[in-house]
Image 1 (spheres, rainbow, N blue to C red):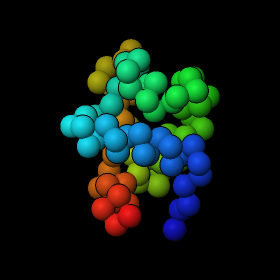
Image 2 (cartoon, helix red, strand yellow):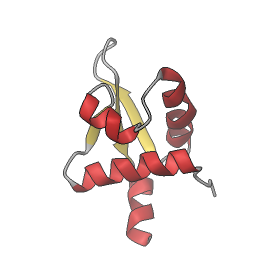
Image 3 (cartoon, one colour):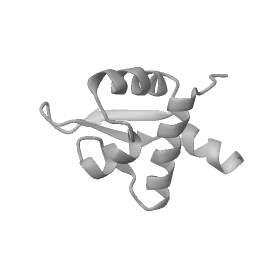
Length: 86
């Protein structure tokens, strides 16, 4: 089983808090969301350090609405189950 590191846990927890408020898909280029998900600032490097492994492990889905738009993140059923069991 994959063990989340501290930064991954913070990101998943922030996503879950938004999910509980009804925000299902999060566009990280919207400052309100990027500040929540990346409280110490968002950069391509920080994004690439966190998100790809969470997508590979099945905790997040990442998509793009258009080539010039930033990524849209969404929690997966696997991630939501972490909170229902925890």
